[in-house]
Image (cartoon, rainbow, N blue to C red):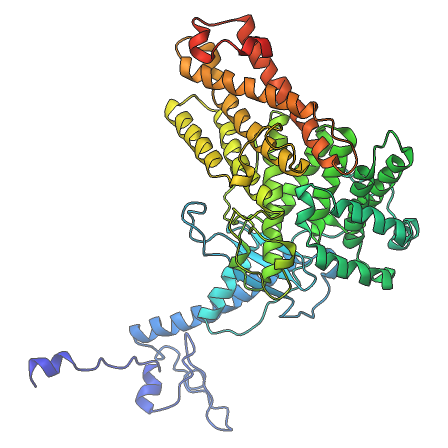
Amino acid sequence: MTDHQRGRRRPDRVQLACLPCKQGKLKCNRAFPACDQVLGDFHTFRCIKRSRQEACMYTDRGLKFNAARRNVDSMREKIDRLELFVSEMRRPASVIGETQRESDAQRVVGSNEVTPHDSPTQHAGTLRISDTGSTQFIGPSHWESILDDLEDVKAYFNTSESTGEDAAHRSIRSSDVSPIDIHLGVAQTYTKEQLLALMPPKQTMDRLIAAWFNTLDPLRLIVHAPTFQTEYQRMWLNTTSASPSFLALIFSMACLGAEVSADPTADPMLASQAEDMRRLTAHSLVLAQYALLPPYIIETLLLHIKGLLLKEHDITYKTYTLLGLATRLSTLGGYHRDPSHNQAISPLQAEMRRRVWWMIATYDIIMCYQLGQLSVVNQLMKDTRPPSNLYESDLNLESVRASRPMTENTPMTFMISFGKLTSIFGDVVYSSHTAFDSSKVEALYERLFQARNDLPPQLQMASIEQSFLDSPEAIMHRYSLEILHQKAICILYRRALSDSNSFEARSRCLNSAQKIVKHIIELLETGWPIGHFAASIMSIRRHIHDFVFVAMLLCLELKFPMPSPSQAMGEGWRDVA
């Protein structure tokens, strides 16, 4: 035999039978420590019956092979027990005793395809979608992700047992509704029948909801108007079929419609009607068990927050707390992950989820800044793409057309531009809470400068005198973007006011403060009527915070002037201050 043939000789087969069975050419069941296989119909035990326990021996290779097989079987049993245990932990208490499972109760698609910049980890979690439309994002560190790993291990062992479960109940335990809801302040729980009895007539609801959809506020765009109208009309055909979450949505819209319809001081009935709708919204949210994230919950919370802002004319800690609730629920629902990771989400749903997340991020950054807090969203690992620049008619249930160019003015153009600038503003605010780094400050200034230059022509700053024929909406959009840009510069160089050597930084800070004061005075002198332009009036009131902020900067410079102020900002700003 040549060396080549000897090298290719097949290895000896592993002897699995014990030595006595091998020698006697008997069928061995390979039991350990002594085989007890029977033959035919006669209970004739080979080694135990014939007292050959001591002679029943296996080869070393056979012992190792059999032990490995037994370990595999044992591992299967352990995995089954662990999986059952994890499933019972996930199942709510109301269905612990149920044994019937539906394997198609949920569709799970892993969101592993993430951008390197936003999500450096390879496995970024899972987005679950239930048959009811609710969604839940499960991060890779969550204990429920063990169940997915167990399914992978079971596939390795070629097991086929299904462990599906209805994701609508997942890890959040549904229990009896508490008599007092901490977030919404509801001390009494209404049934759906009671809520329907308290609902105003259809004509009144139609008028209030239409008033909200006809405002200039970008928040109205988080609900697709044609789809909503279809479901709204269907609801009136059979009101008892309406879900509590949809009732909460229409109540919140009616509340906002009452707030923006006319001046509440001139019509006290509108203020009372708005308050009634606001309370019905809170009751509906509690009845819908908002923590379980049924459809429209995030949208309703945003609209509810907007209603409180219109009522109080300012940000309160109640609205701040509700915003925190909306932010946490949106991350629980996976809104911070782009819907393209999950093929079960339709194109229309994907676009609306991007809009909702865009507004969540914008509200979180702006409101946290005004209360002196750090934004949660801006530092979150996320990869949701900006919404598309589209008209409502460009969206339908089957498909969504490609985004229009930003030079084409759609209702979404301002919302997209403001969101991009707000994201940079959030980074500027975050930098003000960290140690001063001149290189990072200059990098942020360059980003602000570039973002301003990248604005589409219709959103470039122009004074009211130069654009008095334009709509109040277009004018407010330009002023809002310009004031946000100048405010970011003030925050970025605020610490330079105490440094006598930073003339250029002081110049940028104080010049921006001067411009903000000038812009706000121009807006206050417009004399726009309340009513149809209520959203614009709300924007002006929001800028009062900016006015106070920059006024304090100018007063600080007046109180403690630094050397050579003319080099820093010129001579004209003291009269403005």
